[in-house]
Image (cartoon, rainbow, N blue to C red):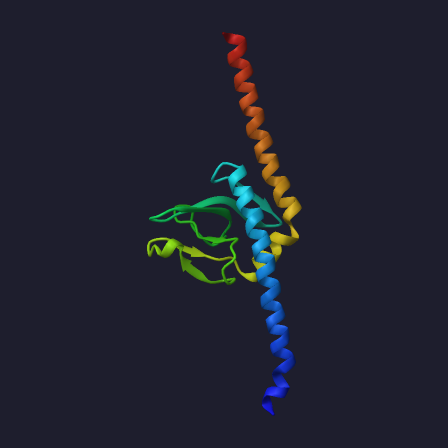
Amino acid sequence: MAKDYTKELEKKGAERVRLTKQLQDMLLQVAKDIADSVPLGTEVEVDGVCYRAHRYNSNIGSFRTVVIVDPGSVEDFPLYRAIDNEPPGSEYYLHRDFKRVVRVATRDEHLHFANHLPEIIRAFEVKEDAIIEELRDAFERLRTSL
């Protein structure tokens, strides 16, 4: 009898989990593409959230993604939460390396990333444009001085 009362709630919970997983899988691919396209450590701020291209290294490999820089962390010891496809808000050991903990962004942080994706990508593009311009200027100065 009690099971009848929660049947609809269980369906909604399963749908939430399914949709969250689909969204995370899509966002992880985009985050990897961004992290592969810009220099590691590149940071942009969009709508008050700082995003950073980051690489986690373990004892057997690495993993590149975009992370959210925790605003409460200190500069010498920043805390990151990764755009990832593990359960939102969870932690895990990358490649079972106990020295490399990956903290996963919360569901709300994944939604923020998804809802602001065009602005986030554009912000990374602006950073790349600035680097390209600096390189062209340096190249031109060298070319004209030789």
